[in-house]
Amino acid sequence: MIRPLTQGDRATILRLLRDTDMFTEAEIAVAEEQLDIVLNQPGQKDYDIVVIMDDDVVVHDGGGRVAGYLSWGPTPLTEGTYDMYWMAVAPDKQGRGYGKRLVGWLEERVRSEKGRLVVIETSSLPKYNPTREFYLGLGYKETARIPDFYKPGDARVIYIKYLNQE
Image (cartoon, rainbow, N blue to C red; front, side, top):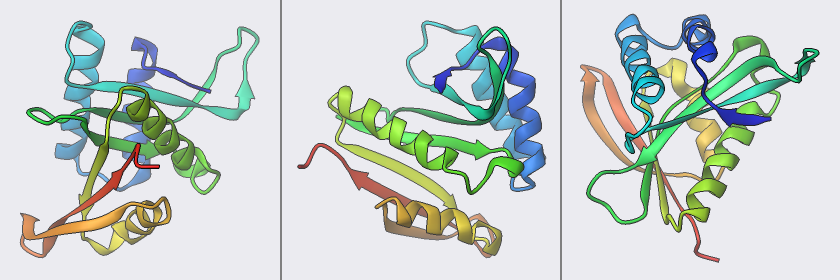
């Protein structure tokens, strides 16, 4: 099940981000800021966050454990372009389709809003090789690399996918 972010998810997502061992503390601080914007400014239109629940854990009230999350929003000053800002899946849940389901959910949501383009960016560091292969496997195309963007030797890699073009 994919559902909107709740206050109770905040600590779980921050722990999940640390557990992946993919993000620096500075990056996690940015993700935390975005979580707080979504949770504390319900009228804002810049970001939205959803969580995907663990298929294997269901508690008596129908709840479960967060297996991953995704943040996204419309790209300012564009028509029909959306950014995927963050996505992370708990290390023990990776490789089980949660990330694919989150991206599929995002694409359907963007289509339903008459969006036409999803943009994703990531790092060129070797530890992100599986991430980049994941996006390529979902039909995203690498369209740009900005050398030394994040720091010397770490390029910004940009992927895009056009939607509603059937």
